[in-house]
Length: 60
Ligand SMILES: [Zn+2]
Image (cartoon, rainbow, N blue to C red; front, side, top):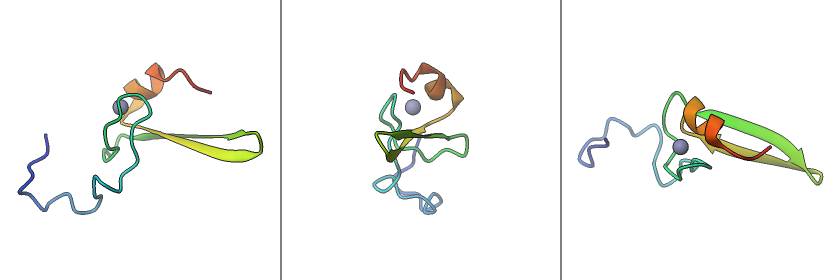
């Protein structure tokens, strides 16, 4: 739960954080996962909250 009055999490702004490809939440956790692959010659990247969302992903 994020306290909107807190400035403690200013390292990552939720508006700028990548969104989890599974649940759509801002990925600001230290446990987040990143998957990269090449599709049609372009580098693709998806972000996930944690290993649980990563396991639920139905992509490459
Ligand atoms: Zn997620």
